[in-house]
Image (cartoon, rainbow, N blue to C red; front, side):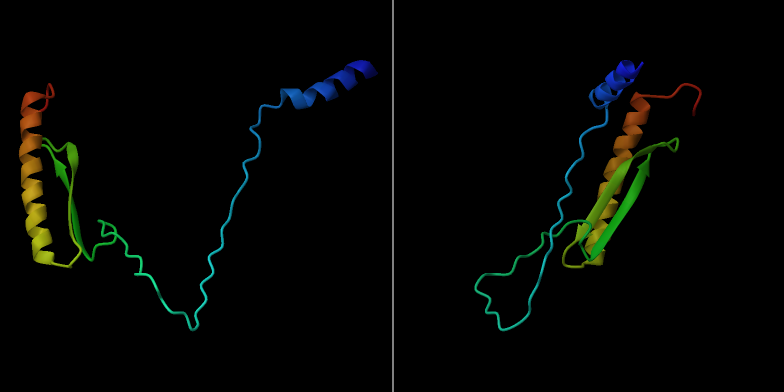
Length: 111
């Protein structure tokens, strides 16, 4: 009986199915202000939809109301009128594409 218990206790680590622990790496960023002379050009962040000062997004639906996709427009210069014009252009093009898709792939029983 003791040998069976000992054998089970020794085999228990072999039966473990848990993955090994993953190391967690943490970094620390320290910024020190002082008499620092800058010798390189500053790093600039690329302008994206998330960082643009003027941005719009619209969901496009097909003629029966099913979501078809999203259109986005943004301006890094903050030109709101240009963003509106670009979004309207992209939305009308995708709306025409959604209508053509629904005509080519009708859903039975839905008008």
